[in-house]
Image 1 (cartoon, rainbow, N blue to C red):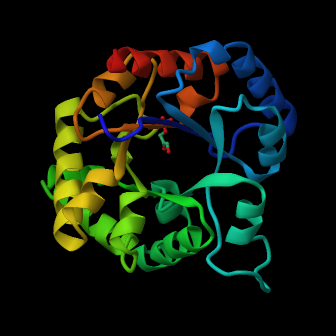
Image 2 (image 1 turned 135 degrees about the vertical axis):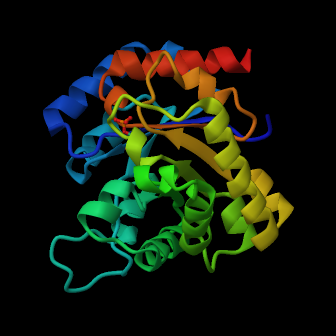
Length: 256
Ligand code: 13P
């Protein structure tokens, strides 16, 4: 597989600094389970980034869960892309369904964030996914490809080829339900086709597509085994270091 597999945790609004330190220590003790052919990242609350930068095993990259698309200014409570980049943050999530739903983020605003992330030398992780009524209506691919094209709009083909898209069906997040690997693969293939048509076949080939939604150690391999799925974006199961390491081992099993 030409694309490097990516196992990414999204901690959401979990973990104090002390808890993040304990996670990093425990994962460090299991770092022999982190195969170097796989890339790892944790998207943590801002307050945990410093301790993670200092303490995470070197193979695990830093990620943020959000960013505000301006260099600086009177935006109380927000964090600028340059502040994250200075910190050594490699990945930044944009368009997570929780932010779309709870904070009313539009595709246009998400696109501004994606451009700001790229302009600051970091890698955007654009989260997309249909909700349950859209799934019932059979419009999953239209919804998801629409979110991808709007989210990545204005990026060059090279930039798209280095980006990450996480396909997370909204109904699968935190529910214990997952898409079937076949269904997730079909959506990933539709994303790649839309990217090939809009940018270039090379951009579509380079883009990494993760599956997210109730991923656990016992199901992660079934997704990563699909040709168009390059890893996983994991919420709940990324909070426990042993479970994170078990997912790393499961992905390693796919490579062998
Ligand atoms: P869960 O893995 O807890 O379902 O969360 C998925 C998610 O939203 C990751 O961004």
